[in-house]
Each structure stands twice: as C-alpha cells, then as structure tokens.
Image (cartoon, rainbow, N blue to C red; front, side):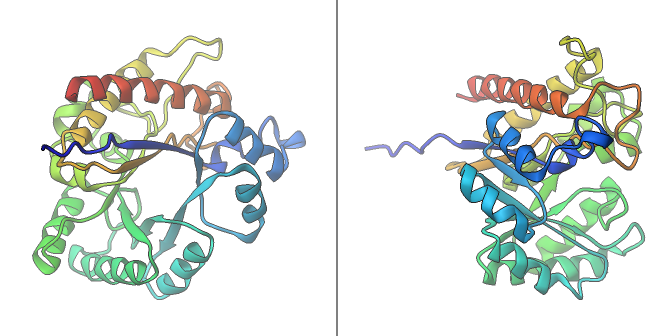
Length: 284
C-alpha cells in the first residue's frame, strides 16, 4: 500500500517590528496589546529575538516563537542560541557576519552555528540579508557551495528575496526567473521572510490605504505564488514552512507617505495565504 505523506503545514509569524510606533509614537500600544493583536489577526506566532517579557504573552495566547540571532564574529553565538532555546524556539533565523566577511570565513562561522544550534535542539537558518555575509547572491551561492563541500548537506537558508532583488534592481518580470534559480536550497528551507518588494524598494506598500492592493504588491504576489510552488515541489514529506510577512516601521523600510504598516501586514498575511493555496493547487 502506498504511503501518503501528510500535507505541509504553513505557520505565519508576525514581527513586533511591524508594530513599532503603532498607532502613533505618542500612543504606542503596550507589549500586551501588540501580542494580543498578533494573535487576533490569525498569526500562529512571532518572529523575534526572545526576551523574558515575551514569555507570559506567548503562553497566554498560545503563540509560538521563531527565534533570531545576530552576530558579527560569532563569539557570542553560543550564548545567544541558548537564550533562544530557553525561550522555546524550534527554528532560529541567523544574521551572521558583515558585508565584507569572506565566503570562507562565513562558512566556518555558519557550520559552527548550525552545529551548536543542533546540540541545543534548534534548527538554525542563515538569512539572505544586507550587511551580512550573504549580502549578494554571488556570496550566498559561494557560501552554499563551500558549505555543501565541507558538510555534505545543503545550506539552511532563511529566504528574504527583497535584498537581492533591490541590490540587482530586478524588474518584476524577472523576479521568478532570477530569484528562484536555486530550487533545492529553497526547498531545503523552513523559513521565509516575505517582505513585499519592488525593483527599487526593499519594502513596498501592500495597499493604497483604502483597502485596494497596489499594482506593485500584485507583482510581488505573483512571485510569492511561484516561490511557494517551488517549495511545494520539493521532496516529500514537506513538513512545515514558517512565513513572516516582515514589514517594518524603522530604518528606512517604511516610507512616510505609505499607509500604516500593521494593517498592511495583516492584509499581506491574507494575500500570502491565498498565494499558498493557489500554489498548493498547482502542485497537487
């Protein structure tokens, strides 16, 4: 009798970055209210660096946590990973090195990080991110090659395609062709940061502020459906995929003329879920 693999499960995680200064700087919500809003919006968890004040709210609301570690030289990696393990994380998103970290040095750091995480019961993923060792697609590809050669396994990547898309100023018609050119690495991943992007902006508005999707987001959504399709085409069983609609409010990601970030984040989750369902039908 043929064994049928269970369908993959999709987890949506919000980031508190989407709620910084919400609804405005003078009346910013408390942490308790932010966490309640995340759960009420249908999210399964949060994508955050664990800190003790999160614990009672995670427990109260039944939310999971996807951890985060940031380290330039790796000296503090073990301590940071222990914090995430103690906080109940299963997956940890890692931003390692700097823009000028060589692929060889980065690979050594990543191998050490993944091994420490595994000993702690964590699954560490390396994020494709600006000003880290994976800043360019070329460096990520070389690191993946070296990692495979030294470990015999595929590099676990947290995919945030907004950074390479903007770095290369890719046009929407090229998003899928150029950004999904490493399907095995995509299928290996369990963490996606789905920040809507354009050819010139790392974060674009989801809506026009009046409920209508922007043309730029519709372009991104077509890419997201293709991304999910590639992941679903991977070898069974597929297990689970954790997706963070990572829209932020600070450090230049949010343009002042754009609509508020949190309502757009909620809408982004809804539209990504639709893209996932369409991708699932395409691969069924």
